Length: 551
Image (cartoon, rainbow, N blue to C red; front, side):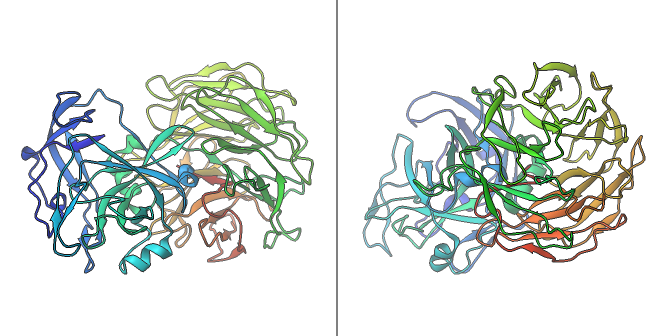
């Protein structure tokens, strides 16, 4: 945990860490759990960047309450990972989460007019439960779900954050991996977390704060995947699929299940009713994707376990359901490698590619033989460097999937490595002004010329959709807005040919309590539909869709 070493003098009527401190007056201690020892690292702070929209509301719930501290010299200690959209099901309402801090552990005097008591020498750890947004609004009238999050536990005594905990972490765990979902921000009055919804945090695992942090530090956007929708029944129109992942209700047959909503036979929408096509597929932090792995023109599903298990399990489509999950590869995408799906050798069967990224930018391919993936072989390097976002698509129309990599951040480059059927060629820059900051990229053939194009979703309040078309040797266009009101705020955008006209369309999944799916169809020059709902209950809560991009 990182903390400001010198605890400010606390005025009982305000939270000291919400001041605007001078960087030269702050020392950061990293890797220490007891204040009176000398363990860990000590670093000075060279600069502080506070969110430009930071405000304090009338009921003392700070909005956009996050700031970034730049260390004078890098730390050698590995920091906690940020949570992202693909981790959302680990911190749904009722989920267990953890907060840490050196805040007050006792309260002296009257609950309203008293003051914080003793402060601990040892770092305190407290388990909480995420509260739902409706309950939070009942406690805090100015609560905003886009930027705030509350958690607590029932019972007497101090059961959450207190004075001196500001800036500390709220952590969710998925398969043993800790991820930062919130930053300690506010409490109700002076009750120090006594209420179930009494502990308030800045929501950094998704939404505007997450996007702002990534824009400031692009290297944090280190985990996610990109998957298009699939044609699961072979009618030449893409359908949508929801992966529940994890155990939603103990003992429920819906745990770890997979649900499909088929495209309307007329191609005009809406999608059909969701039906369960598989069970026991895709756990909490695993990456599910879609592809036609046996070449029967019905898309199947694959899940990458990654980590130390590192298997690729496939369930083939029968046209009305997915068959049993079988291991098609037992050593693929270890650790944090990023998987992608595409037919890289042009034989009509989708293959899988692993991108370790980092300094080498290697690409490893396992070809499908229709019943399993072959051994992983080296196909090229320098392809997806650092934390760039890789995917696969046939950008030159030769029937083989190529690599497409987005740098994002302030650079906005798009690099392509063409497939020769046995390896990927040298990366070439196909666009130098596309997909910036934390925008969400995707690929698809939007004008029907059989060459994949690129699209970026700005999301947030802007909700613009930009497209650059492929001419076979580059992506053309920088400011072509194909839709000016689509995939707003935290929605997950995706791609698929939902009406079967040969031109890919776009979809957006609201998830959460609304679970709506909106589609905007392509006419080859624009995405024409505005607010066209094709399903009103699909991909709920923290479920993940395909297609959808979770970066």
